[in-house]
Length: 404
Image (cartoon, rainbow, N blue to C red; front, side, top):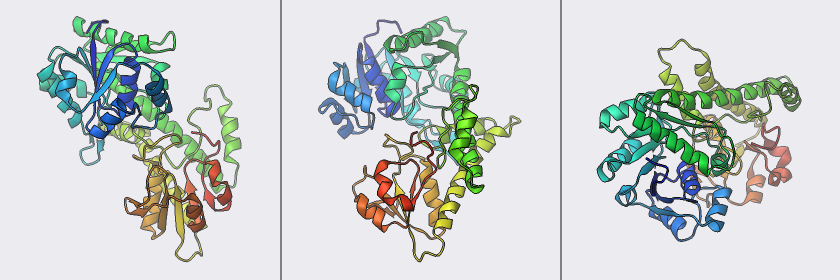
C-alpha cells in the first residue's frame, strides 16, 4: 500500500465500517460492502445513514464524499489497493471464541479478486488470531488495527482519535511500511493534531483492544457496585461519586451508574479476554465478567421490591438501547434485567420508538408513550429522559447524571 492508492474497499457498514468509509471518502474513492440492498440504496440514493449517527448523517447530507455502497464483493474488491474489514464478530459462548467466519469470507474474496491488496482487520478478534489467519490462508498482506469508537460518536472518534494503533509483522519491512502508511492515512484524515500512531506486533495490538475495553468495563462495574452499596444503605450515590472523582487520578469518565455494561464491544471483549486468559493466573478479569451479571440481578431484585403487593403487575421497559442517541439493542443490560423479571413471572411491556408496535422477543411493544406510562406499575429506564417526568412516581433508574 502506498499513500497514493486510488481505491479503498470497506467490508461492513456498521458503526465502525461506515464511519471509516465516510472518513476516508472525503479524499479517496471508497466502495463499501453490505449484505442488504435496502441499506445500500439508502446510502447511495437517499444519502441517509442506516445507523443512528448524527454526524454521519450530516456528512452524507453536506459533504462531497466519494462513497458508493454495493452488495457485490467482487465489484468492491477488484482493483482495490486497501481493504478494511469491519464485519461483525459475535462472541460464541459455547466455543468461548469470537465468530470470525465473516472476516475469513472477506479475506478469501480479496485473495481471489485483488490478491495484492493490503487487508486491514478492524473487526474485534481474539488475541493471536491475525497470526493464525495469515498461516491458515497463506496471505501475507494482512494487518490488524483495533478500533476505539463509541456508539453514536464513531465518526467523531475517527476525526479526533486519542491514538491510532496498527499491528503488523515487525520482521517484515514491507508490511511494516504498509502498517505505517495505513496509520498515516487515518491520521491524515483526522482533525485532531499530534495523534499518536503506534506500530506494533499483531498480537500486541489485539491485546491492546481487549485489555482497554476490559479496563473500561471494570470502571463501569466499579461505579455500579458503588451505586449498589449506596442504594442498599440509603446513601446519596451521586455525592459519593462526585467526591471520589475529584481525585485527578480517577476523573469523571465512565462513572454514571447503569443497569450494567452492554453494547457491541464490552460484553464480548471481556468474555473473549477471559477465555484468552484461561491459563493465566488472574481473578480480576473474571470478576469484571461476573459482576455485570450480579448487577442485573440486583436491579431486578430492587424492581421486585417495588412490585410487592401488586396483583399481576406490569413493568414498563423504557428503551431497549444501551445508551442515549443509539439504536443498538445488542447486549443491552436492560434486556438482562427483563430476563430476570420474566423468570419471576412479571409481565413486561416495552416502549421503544425505533420499533413500530408488535413485539420484541415475545414482549409486547407499546408505541404510545402516554399509554405505556399509564399501564405500567413500575417503569425501568437505564437512562433518564425528560419525557418520563409525568411518570416520575413509577420510575426506577440508577442514572445519576442524566448522561451516558
